[in-house]
Length: 524
Ligand code: MSP
Image (cartoon, helix red, strand yellow):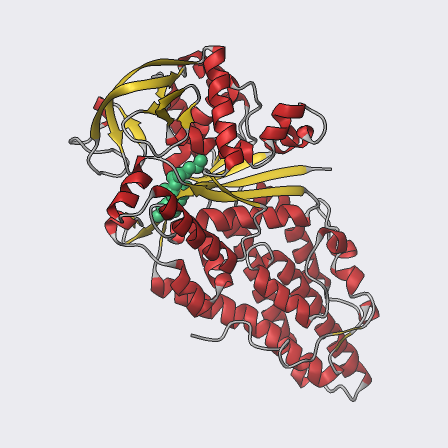
């Protein structure tokens, strides 16, 4: 059994989600869906980051308890993820009891080991980013990352020894080229490491909303130390601690070694420096990959609550549907780069790619099949136009590598190139000009329609991880079940043989209900 563990960042509950949050989550969901289809045992985790000063302050501003704020806002993420068809296996909250226990256990372990020690922190802190800052990194007294005012802090604190593991981490990064993706981000991390690391403050005493340090309850554990450990809690760290590598504890390590953490570039340092060092200190293996995506900008500025330039995903979903949003976000931007969210561009893509190219292909093919074949896709004996289907086979064969590199925009570009090739194929062959009453006419018509439908099935497969709802509708129209490993069996480089060919070998009737043949994407 091949395992695959994929995670999103856990989201702060100071405010409702925007498309930046939807983005990390849709990326992870698309990968999870593809891996499941490829036969992996997948665990996909998302959730909310509920502790810390930022949340405590927001709760005070709203005159509610932090707990109440977290209870209210975390449901907004859950509701959004439901609308977006996010197939998570666990939605973790850092206030979940099993997580609090992970954090305290880890803290205690490191304290006993001598990797954590008590001292005093004096320096700068950015509350919105929950980040300690060095004096020299400040830009006119402000946080270099978000531009907001940094606060001066002086308080007792526990520290994690980072220097002890610095060179081990450098070696690890150099010898594991797939650890940080895209590769151009690796250099940033390496140069940060080469500057030398100050020990990391991992507890605070000036507020209370956090997990208490075991045995020293004046301190709450630093929110990032708490948050990063969610990746262990969700896959059974508790069982692993109790039973080691047996009685279910073994799945913990199996999953963790395959971890792919999807994160925004702003939080790469936490994931590629602090997190690996925490894992070294805990004697655990490192995740397989940290993939840092770029930001969604609005007029070239990062979308964020404080700038008031956020796009609400709920508005887009209610107007265009979840799949249109999923498609746009993953189609538009190459791996790791920023994207500018442009509403006109969104509508253009919707109308041209989804309504015209894909939607019309499906509806006009179904109409022709109804008219000429009584709704029956001819079987393999009708023959196929192979260049088109070989192109699809080649695409299918290259998918693993593309997904491994998070090249969604390329996958979708190719999928829609294929859709357009099928549209062109139909136009060039003009089946409506053929006479089904004549033997030759009927033969050619059968071949064209068969090719079109096998292609549509392929297209449905290509888009499935990104647009599960649309793919489900196409499959329902084709009268076949949703894509699952068991009925698709696409192995590495797999092609038509075990796939479209299998299901459509014999003549196969599509679903002629009006509902099944409804418009996929109404024009806007
Ligand atoms: N709570 C931390 C993460 C802890 S993970 C152990 C956090 N939360 S966040 O809510 O501020 O951000 C979560 C994710 O959303 C980050 O990956 C961040 O990059 C992403 N986005 C927030 N705004 C964004 C855009 N405008 N565009 C794209 N993604 C951005 O950080």
